[in-house]
Amino acid sequence: MAVHFDPSLSQGQWAANSTELASILGCTRRTICRWKKLPDCPQPAADGRHNVVAWREFMRRNGLEAGSEDADELELGADAKQRRAAVLADREEFEFAILKGDYQRQDDVRRWLGEMITAVKVELMNSAVRTASSLVGLTAVEILDRLRTENTRVLRHLHEEPWSDGSESSPG
Image (cartoon, rainbow, N blue to C red; front, side, top):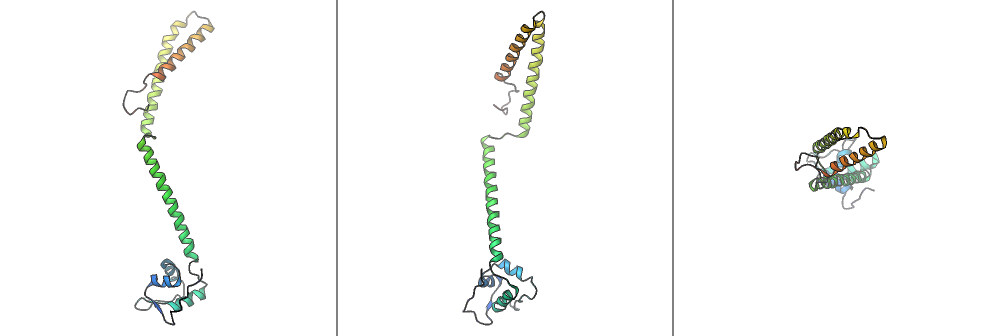
């Protein structure tokens, strides 16, 4: 972007402050602040005003163009705003899913899994005790058939019966 030239400004015209200077030169106040750090930068007058002609000459000597860095900054700012908006939208969606009950607390899930594993273990141990005495004297084929029947009964019982301690916070 080229430097804006205002023909109404004559030799010795002044900008009241950095913001006005930036507006006249076609850049941002932030760019002016950055350029002020360069060597041989025009110094403001005692009352804080900036000589516009001196600043244009400074820009010409140093190959500075208004808007070149500002456009990049604005683009980066827009990308950051878009990323922030996306993160906020994701957070709101996640919080809504929690309110709907789509997610469970980690310690609840661990407790429920522990209760399920305990229920399976108890059922399997009881099944072994119940079945062992009835297998004596049977053939291998009959033993396999009884074990399959007992396994099916245990799995059905675990599927149909409540496995938890009955608290309200259990899944299901």
